[in-house]
Image: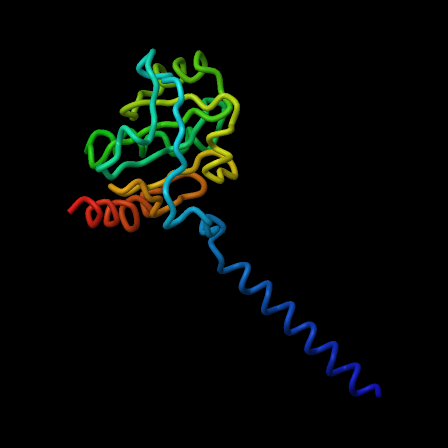
Length: 176
C-alpha cells in the first residue's frame, strides 16, 4: 500500500514538472485565434487621421494590409511604435491603425508627438470593433489578405524578429 502511494506521488510530481516545462517553452504571443482563416469582421468607423471621413475594411478589398490595434495610453504600443515607423518608411502594404478605447484628441496628440506610421487611423472609442476582432489587449496586429481573410494575428508588440521572420515573408508571399 505504501509503495503505491510513493509511485502515485512520483507520477503526479513528474506530471507537474512536465506541465511547468511546457509552460516555460510556450510563447504567450502565440494564442491561437479563432478568426485565422475567416473573413475580417466588417465595420465602418470614423477616421481619427486624417480628420473626417470613415474607414471600412471593404475599402481595402483586393489588397493585402495590416490592422494595428493601439491606443495612446498603451505603454506596449509606445514600445512597438519605432518599428511601425520604420515599417511605414519601407511601405510594404497599407498599415491601418485602430485607435482602441481612446479619445481622438489624445490619439492625434500622440501621433503628432511620436510620428504617424499609419495610412489611416480609425476610431474604436467603445471597443466594439476590437471585441469583434477578438482583441485581448493592445497592441495587436492582424495581417489580412486580398480576399479580406485574417491570415495572422500578433498579440502584443511587434518585434524586429516577428516582422522580419514572420510578417514580411507572409506579406511577400500574399502580395505575389
